[in-house]
Image 1 (tube, helix red, strand yellow):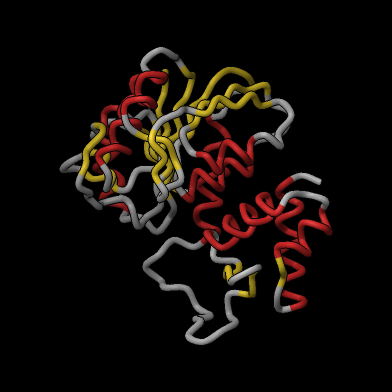
Image 2: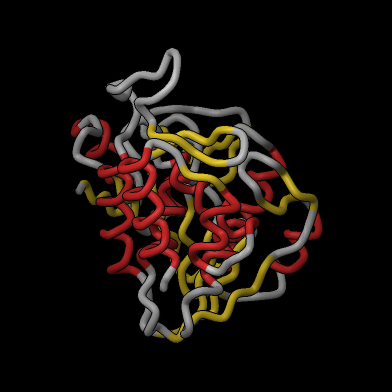
Length: 253
C-alpha cells in the first residue's frame, strides 16, 4: 500500500469510528508507530483530522472545534490544484529541489512513482514520504534542524547546494510581493531558499492567494529570479498581472 492509500484509509477510519490510536494503526498496516505519527501529522496539516494524545479524532470533534474553515486561509483543494499544476514542470528524469511548506507537501504526494528522479530536499517529512516512490532517489540536505517547518537550515545546507545543479527548484515562500520579491519569516530558511535558486536551472514558486502580496522579515530573491509562479484563482488579478510584468510567468489555477 502506498502512503497516499494508507492515509486515505486512516482518514476513512477516523471519520467512521470517531477515533484512531497510533498503536492500532501500526498493527493494522504493519508499519512503525513513527510512520503512523507522520501520517497523522500530514493529515492534520491538511485540516482533515485533529491529533490527540495517542491518536487522532475528526476535526469537528471536541470542545471549541470549528466545522467551517476561515475564509481568509487557503483550502486544501486550492493547495492541491497548485500542486497538480506544478506537475507539468516536473521532468521525466533529472534532478529537482523541494523545500518545505504545505503546498510543497501536496506536491510530494502527487509525484508519480514511475519518474526517474533525484530529489534534493531539506524538508525531512518530504524526504521520508518520497522513499515510498520507487523511481525517486532522495538526497537529504543536512544542517541545523528547524522544527517549523521540519527542515535543515543554515551553513551546512548551503554548502551542499553550492556544489550541485538541479533542473528545477520548487519553492514555497512566506510572501511574494512587488516591493520585496520573495520573502520568508526566518533568515536561516531564506539562506537555503536563496542557495536553491542559484543551484537551479529553473525556479517554480508555489504560492496560494494568502501568500501573494505579503511581505516577511527575510528576503531571498527577486521576482525576476522566478521562472513560473503558480497560485490559485482567489489571487488579486491586478496584482498577478503586475507580478507577471516584473518577470515570472504567472499561472492561476
